[in-house]
Length: 360
Image (cartoon, rainbow, N blue to C red; front, top):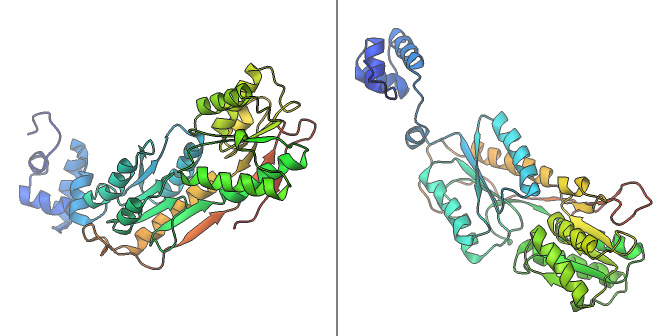
């Protein structure tokens, strides 16, 4: 009988009163007499036997596990995505594994390559940079991948993206129309997709409002709360004197608002603040933060559904890694429309209102 360790085919065979070969056939689904199947299954349940998912994946091609890899698992935007991705994939019988890459490119590439190990059936990847190495590895992925973000044309991978250029234009146009003329921009790194796109929207909105861009009003370091605080202090120390600050995400905006309070500036009377993402942080702070909703939940749901559709197109017996991995149909692109939510940080006397922009 069992020595107290995890149940094995030997202990199950002893409990069921059958041969080890019979247990192996039943557990592997090869086939056996109905009475043998019943005895083995009952013995396995009594002993608490749990099939090894990795071993089953090597044999049958599926683990019933999916992976979501993002930059920062603590970012409220990714938390919102996780909730939606997990809801969709759990309903389809999958477990969701989470991986935080810290935006390290080699780590992101390694996650994609790990599909060849068959410890996960598919991947949702949310990178903030897309390099030639990303394109190469994504194209050769051993299993289905959906990217939440922008991909270059011609990359044969499904993607769900936000129109953050238009989202930034909505935010800055709102500030221009409210009478602000010295609109600072606190951004993340310019070599990232969101950093580049949101700056493009900022510059377009200034041009459309007849405002000449002032390089002294821009700061670009990282996307964290501390960076927003330091950026606004730096702007004020340099004598930039903005009457509004548009920030590339809500964390930067909250940091900027903190710095404004530390300097005795009233929001929005002396300086309006607008963020992006419309995360839980925007509604929880005081004054409530105006922000651009980029559809984080919608993007998460869409990515999960696209991945499940790809899995339904993929045979159970998948080939190893390489461009020969099956990809039924052309790569799909979905773009979510941004929506500006105006709150007290930029419109103190008006209730929250929204302005929607179409996807471009």
